[in-house]
Image (cartoon, rainbow, N blue to C red):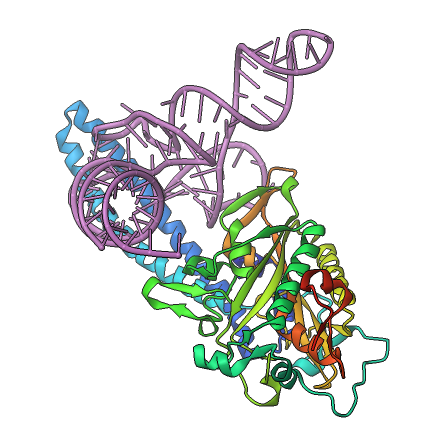
Length: 426
RNA sequence: GGAGAGAUGGCCGAGUGGUCGAAGGCGCACGCCUGGAAAGUGUGUAGGCUCCAAAAGGGCCUCGCGGGUUCGAAUCCCGCUCUCUCCGCCA
């Protein structure tokens, strides 16, 4: 979430940012509400602190008076303290109220979009940051969508997943399972080569962790929740991996921190149904390799670009046609300041599929997480956090199957063959 | 799941009612010493909020978390969480 101090000092910038997220004048009132609530909080605190200071002072004198044998005055001070305690109790109550209200308000304010974020209300307004300039693959008229290919070549089985678990839990088998594993391996290797430290995190996290990266309270309904143990299944490796540095003060020289991790991701996604969610387009469990960076604020946008390069390199290597979108204010995630989406062209479905989302969260997550660093002047400031999928597997598999289908079977991209051990699925 | 022990600053560790945001040590930073280093030596070294235009300086809160007793709590009481040891179960 945003810092109150930032909202106070950059009010115009905050308002403009929220306008980019299509907030109405009425909704924008929250900015004034926040400042007013914070004013209230401050004035209560000043009063409370003064009361407590007086209480502390008097308490100290009581001990001294008793030692001097001045019981009468000591008793008198005890009475004074008693009334101060009552005052303090009331002020503490008011303080908690203001703090609680402030927190509620702050949680409703999304991140302020970066200046380069285009205006817009939805996916149609996203800016094509990097288009695919070469011709798109064209398949013969009898080309099949990936869910039919999956059945033909026994790559994955959604109905079996339904039997075992429920809709949206694919079962990969045979060469399909190997292809999945090869992709994971390939992505992790590339990330390691790019200097990311590999992490195998827990797949379940506690409340504090889910709150740290902003999944709570915004996206509570999208996570699977294990009530008995009060744990959440991770929707992305971002959650446990970024939270490694929750409540941490790093040294400036440790930046950037570069982490990568493969995990299954679990999403309840009570979204839409129909052709667009068929097959692997939208599932409740999918595999993903995530890259995370914790960076100095001055360098975070350069870092974001380097992460785009990294993801581009992966798609180039897989020989998949893709484009990069700069998300508009209306399509951007709640916690992000700037997001680029990668979309791969799925030739059989003849549509673009999102396979990666690379974002700079600036201090929005680190403020909640208390992820800070000591700068050259020994001052403590919030670090910037960034992350990106590199890559999300299910849709990559969908695109690979469709685009690489031939009468002789599915051709495996060159770079994957060392990991799969075969060059075709037939 | 059962029994016991414990939780103090970056780490170790002292502290059983006021003088304790906290001795001492290690580590770290800077300085002195040195030709350079080691050793030695000196100084500094938690975070949040807040007052002040700012600096200097001040106030409040925090000794796992929450509550209670008390004029006053790291210290006493209650609840919770976590860690360790032993037993049980188990990949």
